[in-house]
Length: 443
Ligand code: PMP
Image 1 (tube, rainbow, N blue to C red):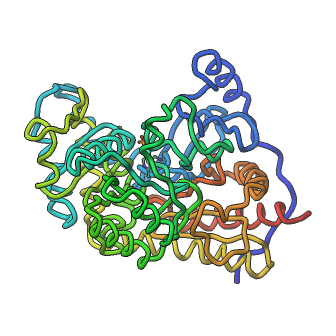
Image 2 (image 1 turned 45 degrees about the horizontal axis):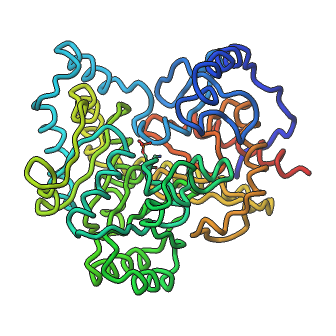
């Protein structure tokens, strides 16, 4: 039943304007970018400079048009330039952009979240996912009066010092796993174990008895491919933390408001002690947040002794964007429709690849998907990904750009579907993906 495939190659898209912007950018910014993965280092050609986005579509400086499956790395669950978000932002901006004082908009966004999420009672807004996680770690250390943090190989939690150890995202994309510039003493406070390995966890808890403040995990690890975990394993994690007086932190910067309004905690029905958010919560503007029980949150300054602050925290314009976006997500059937649409899309790609016996899988959950050049039925740990398979992703990425499909420029990153992706977009994308796969597997 899937459509016929044209296996003829296509010429590369023109990148003249992007290339000249990139030349300039290289003299201004390290590597020409303000965040590493954007540099297209592990895919073909110079990075595309984006001029505009509308709905599910993107246009670059050379006028090339794409259906966007990166969606600003996740925040744009309603697509680009959503009218309701835009109107709310414009309305809010008429009254000034920042006050460094409380506003009713912060209450409004907090109420929207807390009333519809049974896993947290209080929240603190910050300006990025990195900041949310860094603060959550400090909170866990402050509450438990312990120093060590346990994280998982391949999970990315932003770029704060103690978490840039065996992290995914740009690090794994560039073939490194940890950053320079992290004092040894800091890294020593971070214990790293493999995902999906109960014995390793038990051993760590024995070796560092009463020293582990927090275990942090992306409950849906999505920065080193999509390493879906089993619910039983996440429950095991919950239990071992409880038994050891260790706080469990779910980093839901990607999964939050994505798998459902209550994120992965709601999806798996597992209650972590602290949850971090980013991306979707800000409607495309810079917002992050962390939340927990009132008791845990009241350890934060000015009531408690854990200090955390921000000049632009709870910025009214960013709050307005968040309010507009999250209100849409609460509409009946929003997630059902989005998730069904995604499932249908990825299923037909799976069927196509299986029918041709390609060593290719699509892993997905909710509206998150990952193209994996593997024949494994499940990939749950970073170690199971063959770095050599990224050559195939590189080729596919180029072919997809040539066919008007924009994926994030790394085979270790996931793709996202938004409410703005319609049937025509997805049919066009499928055809492009089929053609590209045929070319990738031709030789
Ligand atoms: N945690 C997770 C799970 C993430 O995916 C990211 C970013 N991709 C971060 C934290 C850091 O967020 P930010 O880039 O907004 O600092």
